[in-house]
Length: 222
Image 1 (cartoon, rainbow, N blue to C red):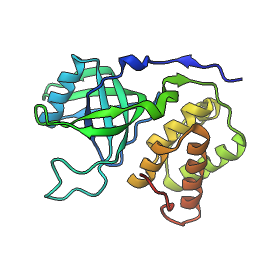
Image 2: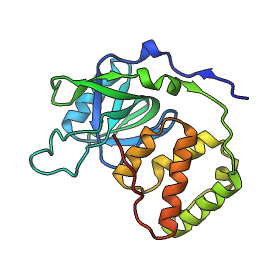
Image 3: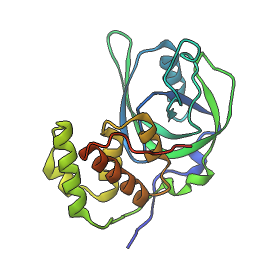
Image 4: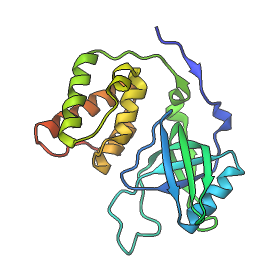
């Protein structure tokens, strides 16, 4: 049976959210994402976030960057807010941070720049379930593990198999969605899946298509 556990209070989510557009990078609720921050505007963003609840929104640009959109590219409407749970400063002025995914959001409006970084008004309403941890057991675990083995072998990915075999379903599926080298549109589709069951189904489909040499899956992100 599912045992819901509050993970983060909705009133702790900021009404104004700084965003970090990064192609091919996926953050999911309860996932951990290490980041190396070195651009001046994102150093400023991190400094401000540390004093304002430590929340940053990860989003993906919609298209490959070019000279016209390099600084402020169009981004997908759905991203994921993460809380800074570790922070270190290097001798050369970079910040090494880790974000813990809290909740997905939709961009309701984009605001004026602050210290050159972008800010949005986020809408968390559709993703209230992201704030709750549930014990979820997905079917066909043996088949899922076999697909993962085949995909890792194909991509020559080293793995700690005892940890993978012992991982609960949600951390396993979300970690693989974040870490595997899928195309940016596929990463976005994984982010936008309504629940864990749908994300697992898409994850397995992407892996199987790669195994069978069919290239990128015809996913659609909105």
